[in-house]
Length: 216
Image (cartoon, rainbow, N blue to C red; front, top):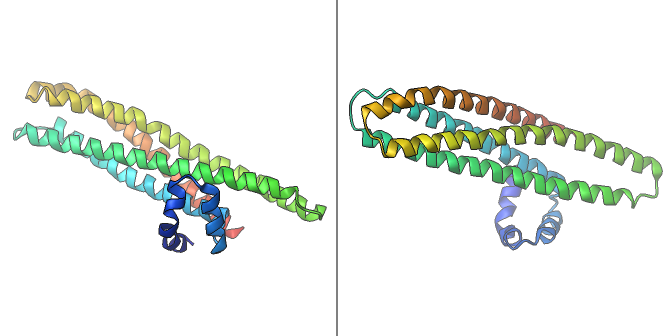
């Protein structure tokens, strides 16, 4: 399904960018792609962004470790590499948040549509079955969203700490300054370890949600 949506997405991109979400959904439905399918696709993209962010934060931590382990050489080069890793980490974090926002948007639209369609049933038995499935899907989604948000909240403190150390190093390129950063490394490592742990949980929840949605 993801490949199909990717194939169709470019011709419809202007609809999304212009804010015509309902027109976007309508166009997608005309080619057989419904909100449920779009939600699965966006959860997959959110999962991928978290996988990429995990690697990026690991790289940033490794570069910071190289700084505090400095034993001669060009401090300017170490600083520039650390600055680059920080910038890449900010970009990765923004992508994670952007993907989560897109998941939230389509889930809200899907559930609103589903609730509205329940009022259109004339067969009570079928309506009750659909309502039960809606409740189950909402419960599954709530678990997913909690895990995504938990991991997302871990990122700002890590980025703030990295930024502080990058700024400090920028104006203190000497061995004495490097020594004072060693204690900072332990705290940053602990926070990144927690971030990666929560991202791993979010990735697991994403996989579970996708599987459940595909199974119906």
